[in-house]
Amino acid sequence: MEDGAEFFSGHNLRVGFYDLLFGRASNLIGEMDFYRDFTAGAGSVLEAACGSGRLFPALGAADRLLVGFDASLELLQQARTHYGSDASLGRPLLCAQRMENFAFGHHFERIIVGYYGLSYVLDAEGRRSFMQRIADHLTPEGQAVLHLPDADLLRRAVPQSEIDAQRGSLVLKSEIPDFTGRLAYQTTDSRVEGNGAIHVTELTFALLDESGTTLREETAAMHYAILDRQDIEALAASAGLRLVESLSGFTEDNESELIVTLVPA
Ligand SMILES: C[S@@+](CC[C@H](N)C(=O)[O-])C[C@H]1O[C@@H](n2cnc3c(N)ncnc32)[C@H](O)[C@@H]1O
Image (cartoon, rainbow, N blue to C red; front, side, top):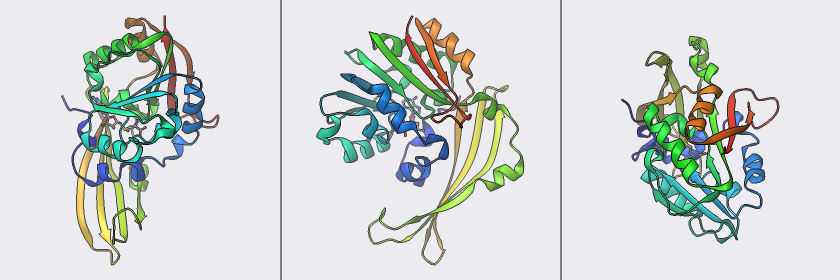
């Protein structure tokens, strides 16, 4: 079985430029306001699979305990560099752990599993264990939010014209000292495997200098477990949690996401 965390590890373009490549998608519009509202008034917040800490500005507060963990040492280092000593965010505490077996000697008022985090746990047993750990780490009045991609969008056969259109390049001006160039990205394949259980997106990333010469090129595959609302409800129930809210996007006109709020049953 593939490890969904693999895509986010190592010293490579997709990890080095994670926020730039993945943090600007239109389906994320509104997420910061959503998480600010979700954590308002909470004294303690845990973000599972926090990555680069991209969401920390919405999750942290000077008088709040904010803890984040992730499997990627490289993304954790980015989070540490950008936010680790930020007193206005409560100096977030960071550590390397996996969703399947994370453990803290603490209960949290809010737990966030943002931007498709659960989807990268590709095996059912790992997801059950993760959900149980969420339940075990919530205070009795606590709430957890999970953000996943819409299952029907992952299940459908993506037309080749749509795959071909998923490409672009980002201008690099200040990201690398004394370097001006572009970061190009392109989806090369999008398919469903594992009897309909896993969506695979193959991607290519390239770093080009000002003259357009390719300095570095990489390919990688992103694997998502395909999970719908019923799957999440069943998973939650097995861990003693219940679903109290479900949204299809962070804004009303967005229907590409599944955002669920869970509380102790
Ligand atoms: C799409 S990123 C989201 C990161 C961050 N939450 C955000 O909103 O930008 C998915 C994250 O899940 C992490 N991840 C994937 N599988 C994991 C696992 N089994 N345990 C812990 N982290 C994992 C990756 O390292 C990556 O940081």
